[in-house]
Image (cartoon, rainbow, N blue to C red; front, side):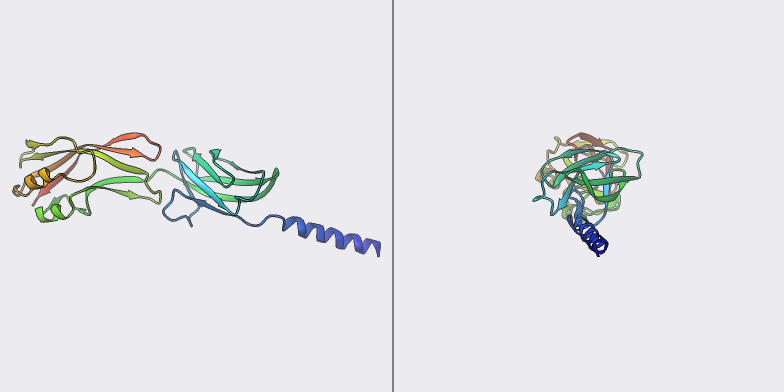
Length: 215
């Protein structure tokens, strides 16, 4: 009988110990869609673990990232390149309570275009409806790069500059630029150069020249 009591007590102790901690949800706040277990190499990934804010003595480790703890439930990961997976381990009171696998991706590709214009030959009326320079990001990472400045030149059919404007310090064409564009003819070109973007890490980069031709 005493052996039976010991076995029952052992089972209850085991069940209670496994139920001490619940399953926590790991989300990458820097993704548009946080249901994906993704982190981007070389970028800041803000991992928020739901339900952890009330838990004391919790910390996170990573197999492929440097980890910075912001508060009780938020951690910043910056994965290394040349890795495919990042294993995150959550510890509470120095006990491993949960392990999550995140796929490591390279930073997204960013394409420059005028508004929603996807072609390189465009009518003036279409330009007027899309009078802002836009970044198209191929990936889930939000605000990976933000456009901050550009310079507009107007070229003739032979690629010779016929008009140059002062650099824009935002994404929209100015009233002066729009009025001049209205006077252009078929074959004239809009050359966007000195396109400056700010990355998610606060670094400024220059994008390649982007050209549109009036049709």
